[in-house]
Length: 262
Image (cartoon, rainbow, N blue to C red; front, side, top):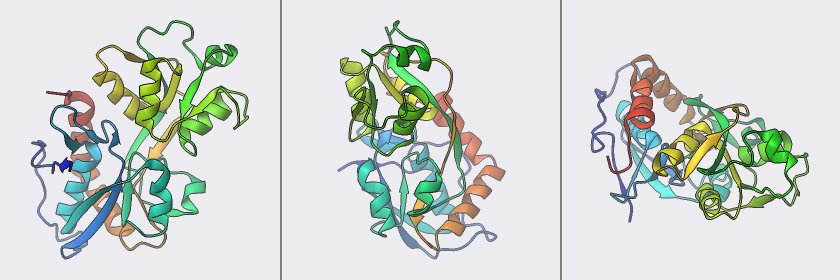
């Protein structure tokens, strides 16, 4: 079983708030959160400790503390997450989920907790292309993606020819599997947001890099079953964390200071 580190156990250098009188009090309510654990540095399994850690885990620990709630995590694949949350099998979902109108038809989103940009993740020795245009012009090059994700649609419509059945797109169940295929040479490109891409590059010891210009901006949010009464309290906690500098401190911890094995 994976161990989940709380903000305190991860030695987060933030003054963790006790229950704030001006925030909703959930009176110890249990919140079951679906997570994939495959999206560093938002949430992933630390290869050195075996612990599930990351920005989102620390954020949820802060949210639970401020709202007087208890968080329980369940590991779920990306393919199953939005349908499962939509069917109220879980109270929430988190895995760097892009806020999109089509997804809003199935689930409710929290307010944005982070904004990122789509980037091109390649092997460290890649020299055949350095832009989306150069990649598209070489029919021998393959891109990895998860079906139904933002990277998939960016690959189809912003990099390639708009054909969702294009044979140059190789589909994988998890983002981690796309990165493994990239490192193994089975594909030549994995599209991801800058958050996940920078996390993988930092942990790759030079075997991965990001090339080219960013391909657009996306906002991340937590997801909930439609009509969930948790949306407003979670949004209040996110706003409180942004106002007191906790969001900035989390960004610094996980994007600037964190090193695998550090």
